[in-house]
Picture 1 (cartoon, helix red, strand yellow):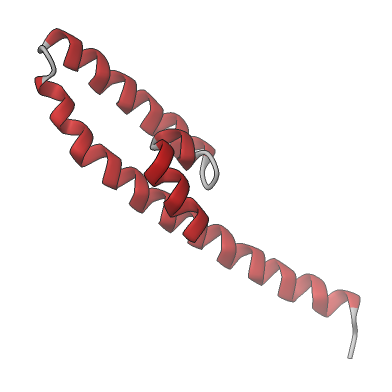
Picture 2: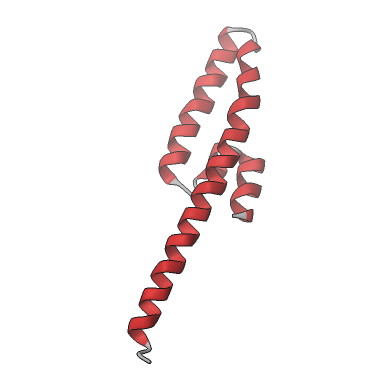
Length: 85
């Protein structure tokens, strides 16, 4: 989870690809949309980045946590089958 937070803090939506490909695609689209809107509104829409960036960080942390939990469950079940009693 820590790596996901650092990556999304530094790289935004690109860092989200570490934890969630779909999330990375969605947030990359939103980032591009806000940047284009910012060009047409003379930068006023770029204020939305202050909202989208933290949302990306939260999404990355939650997604990485869920992936880690799934991995632990898989590891527990796989280990039980490999090493019987």
